[in-house]
Length: 417
Ligand code: SAJ
Image (tube, rainbow, N blue to C red; front, side):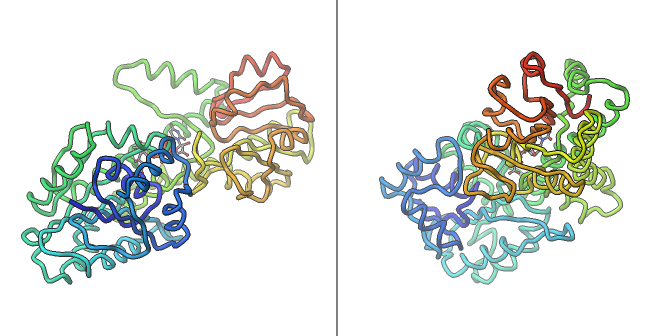
């Protein structure tokens, strides 16, 4: 069998590479010619452990080709972005366009699998109207399923293999064909259902996390009023066998958790109030973080002030800045009249105006160091080697060893204490 993967981004590329590593002939397609060229040349445009070695193997063995146009194949996998518009409504244009693009290449007996996370009913309402243009009878001559990706950036290959997988078929046969496809490498259980249920399940998973994080963020603000360390309180609460409170932070970023709950808000309206409020709570955290930074400076009697922001990526040990809370925190700090210098060892090519190449450059001028991303490089920092203007550190992710920093003479603050 052969596979054509539409979209060579954070999910499509690892998936394409994975199938190729298992001996399947894969053709990858991306609308961005630069992405296609870099893959042909085995130059990665994204950072992910294991991806480079696997890409080299796939290309060298001739099992992975890439271009800007699709090819005939037995199976088409669609892994394109499904972002939200400025008004928080779903933008399904990429899904529709990728589906339309494969229509001329589809033959009787083929399988089309959507991996992108989408609002429930997208397969039915957006994909099927395009796929009927093949003239084939859906469910009999053409098989269609949704199998949402569920992997976490930074551990994509482990999770591709180990995680359970949900497969929602438009027909039973489509579900079974899709199960057989992913059995190529999936060691977790593959659960079969219908397409709309699979769509809802995936969006539910990310919304669960967003709502839980909003709860933690609300508790963090409450704990500050009580002078309680929320991290200690959450740790203790989570010793209960049925409690799993997530962790507060400067906001929720990435292209999934900060996006998918809006799909349910759009569908649910007034019945999605908890979900909606959670989004707003999480989106308010950059301002809260900036205001707390200002309070810390005020308490130290520093007026004006320079902030060294450590971390631009949306979470630890990834090079992805999409929807990163850091950019919003920096905006809020600047709105307060503070000077910001930032550093992130994972973000290359000066992607942010405040960015410096070296950690020292950022820290040397700092009146306060604010850690926004829990990169390993920051956890391992030796505070005795740093020479800021004032020894004040604000750790929004509780990722530093507070004893070490206090022993080095720092005033140490947490978000939620
Ligand atoms: N965050 C918190 N507190 C927490 C956990 C996370 O503030 O307790 C923040 C992170 O710092 C980050 C954001 O949330 O800014 C999202 O990070 P994440 O690690 O929770 O999730 P993603 O976006 O990297 O990946 C999620 C995963 N979904 C779930 O765990 C339910 C992943 O399995 C999905 O495949 C992925 O979304 C996706 O593509 O949908």
